[in-house]
Image 1 (cartoon, one colour):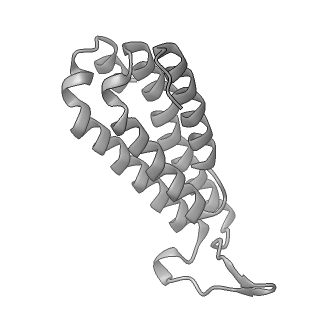
Image 2 (tube, rainbow, N blue to C red; image 1 turned 90 degrees about the horizontal axis):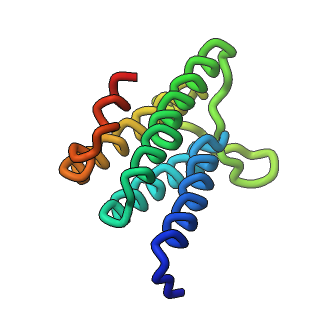
Length: 142
């Protein structure tokens, strides 16, 4: 697929990022972590192609809400004392989960840490691009 139209590339990228954001809140930790890693990788890989408006959209509508939602979900899991989501090996037999991931709260906290690391990765790789944008400092003040 060869697309020379920047608008089309950005619209495809937006759809992909929205889909990955959605999957990053999946109840299954393996799915959400893979989605997050793919999300952050896609942003870094396409950093030079993104317009100022797209960067603002990525931070205000994708990354920061993703981090906030993971924190909210972690607190909710702790409040409800939810059990960990363990994959089924076969019908009726669940995998034993390591003590560091044995509650939903711990799994969602791990997701929030992964989101923070992904944001840090984007900041590290894209600092020069982002510091040129007027909206960027305001985004952090919120």
